[in-house]
Image 1 (cartoon, rainbow, N blue to C red):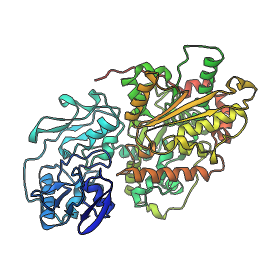
Image 2 (image 1 turned 90 degrees about the vertical axis):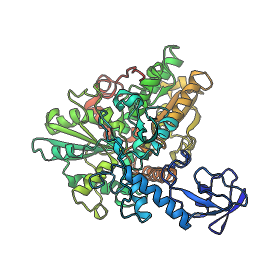
Image 3 (image 1 turned 45 degrees about the vertical axis):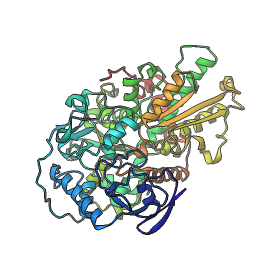
Image 4 (image 1 turned 30 degrees about the vertical axis):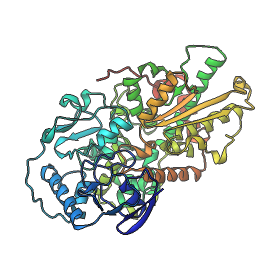
Length: 591
C-alpha cells in the first residue's frame, strides 16, 4: 500500500493504482471520457487531467501511477479550464445533430459539456467527415459523430478478440472503422454490439427498428406477437431511472400490452424448451461416446444460444462447428413456435403474424435474418428490438412506466421456470442444464445449495465445475461414476483462450457454455448504458432473485413444456422438434 493526498484528503491505495483509481477510492470524482474501467487507460482525451505537486505539466490521471507521498489536486482553476478547452475542441469537430440523435439523453459528451458549464461552442473548426454505414443487420456506424476515444477498438480487439475496428489514417484524417474504409458487413464483424455499448456518443448504435414495429401494430390485418428475453426484466427499468438490477417483469408486460401487442410471450418458455432439447442432445452424445465407443462424436458439446458466439465460431473456429449444439437459440425456437403451433391455435396463417422479440443483443437482429431461420415456412422472427429500443418506444407512446401495474404474460407460451430466467447470466445456461440433466439421470435433485452451481456463477472470465454421477437410474447406468466436467466462458476473448486450451489438449470437458458478452446477456450490446461490473453484478443478482421466487425452478417441471410435447412436438430430438428447433452452421470466410 502507498499513501498520497488528493485535494488535501489522505488516501491509502495499492501501489499499482493509478491516480484516477486512488481518487475514486477517496470518493473524489474525476471526469473521464476515453477511459473504460479495468480495460482502457490511454490518456488520449485529456479530460481526466489533474495537477501533481512538483510537476510542471498536468497529467492524465487514468494513466499516471500513484506514488508514495504524491500530492494531487483535481479541481484547480487550471484543471477546470483545461478540461473545458478539451471538451470545447471535441465539440468543435463533432457532427452531433443532437436534436435528432438517439443518444441525445444518453450522451457522455453532452453530459460533460453540461457538467463543465459549456453553453456555447467557441471554436468553429472543420467537422469530421460524415459517413453512415448501415450495411449490417444489427449496427449503424456514423463516422461524423466519432470522437476518436478508441473505446470500441479496445472492446473489439482486447475483450472480444474479433478485430473489426481499428484507427485508420493519421491526424485530423484519422477514422475509426474497418480496414481500408470497408463497411462492417465486408469484414469479420459478429455484430455483438459491445462497440455500441461503450461508445460515449452516437457513432455506433443499434439499427433502430421501432418504426417497423409501429407499422405492424397499426396494420389491422396483422396479429403482432412479442417475446421478451430473460435479461430484459433486470435492465429495462434503467431506461426509466430505476437502479440497475431492479426487476420490472410485471410492468414490462403491462407496457407491452398497452403498446398494442396481441400477445405477450416469454422467451423464458423457449429457454426451458432449449434445455429439454440441448440436455437430450448432450446425453445422446455421451451415450454414443461412452457406450457405442463412437470416436466421431464431437465432445465437448458447446452451447448455441448466443448468436455472436455462433458467428465467431463460424469465422474463427470452423473445425469446432460439429461441437456446437444443433439447437436454435430460445429466440428462434419461440419464433418457429409462434408461426406454427401458436398460429394453428388461433387459426391464423403464419404470414399474417408479425413476430417481434425484445433482446439485450444487437446480434439477435442478425440472427433473425439468417437464411436458415425460416423452418416455419416464413421468417420465424420478423423484427428484433433491443432493450434500449423498447425503452424509447414506451416513451414514444407516452406511457408512464413507473406507475404501471404488474401483469402476467400470456398462455400458452408465457409460463416458464427459474432455470430459464438464469439464461440471462453467464453460467446460467450451464446451471439450468445441470439441474435438468442430473435429475433425469439420477431421479434426484441436483445436490447443490439452493440449486445453484456456484462454481459457474460470477464474473471470472473462465469457470470450471465437475460433478460425479452417483445413483444413475436404469436407462442412464452407463454414466454411473462418471465425472462430468463442464466449463463456462463469457466474452469472446475468454472463449478463444478456452478453445485454444481444448485444442492443445490442456483441458478436457463434456459440456461448455459460451456467452458473447461480458457477464452474459445481462451485459449485452443492446442493454442500457453504461454497463460496468457493478451494473452487471446488480443485474445478475436480480436474475437469481427472480429464479429463487419461482414456483418451478427446473425446465423439465414446466407443465406447458410437457403439454407442448404431448400436443405438438412429440419428444425431444423427435422428427418435428428436429425440424423446427434445430439448425446447422456454416464455415465463413475471415476478412
